[in-house]
Length: 356
Image (cartoon, rainbow, N blue to C red; front, side, top):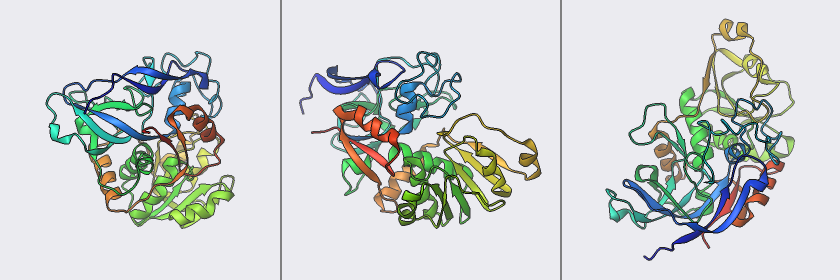
């Protein structure tokens, strides 16, 4: 196969508003280094982390919710530490989700892998790095918002599925985040409360928790309650509804914000709380008496064992979970896709078609 020298891509030129997304048709096709593969991207998807990285919301200088400057950014206040792991280098090609086909293999990679359909593991520890080092596809290295992308061969997992590229691209970031939270909490056939349940990670958590036999209560807006029950939620609660006290073994929280203390009240003694997001705001009030008198366990969840994503691929291939794609846009329409994403009218994921 003869590969082109240049490709189309949406590049992020710095932290800030939607104006920092730059459409280019002259970006050099990357070359796979030793141990890497080159993937022709079929589809990607939009995630909160794409918006948060663009604006620099991960900076300690930011104290508001993820929507507070999602269109305009923070006017340089977050430049020093706006990425997952601190400062980012620009330009950067974002896109944590990627489904595609391996079209070239770097030194040391079996050429027999060329032609494989793959999903890219979105978060991982780089080869030879320390145990706590973290790279996110589309953040610390270029991601799926381009016609081609490279990845370490071990992070390009073969997928055998009748689903379309667009459907498969809805899984990697959201579902691996949700599965990482669930495995961190060691969730079993227990009572679980899921906040932000209509989003990509939240709706994934509903399916993955039901897969483990949990009784799922999903927090969402009234218009999305029935759809979440179709996905597997046993019960739903409105976002402003009172939470029952001492009612849940596990809370999977993606929201944070002012109502956060009520989530701890909702846990049973010895309950487990896991967070992997704070769309309503990262700064919360903790009453230490609630923590120690109820013997609660509070956990963050970002880093994942490699087995988490491998497990996810197995669930997909066996049909144990299904994609939830609300709508799709072409890669060149990424700005419009992010605008639609920020309106929060959708449930699940907004897909991005890349291959023609």
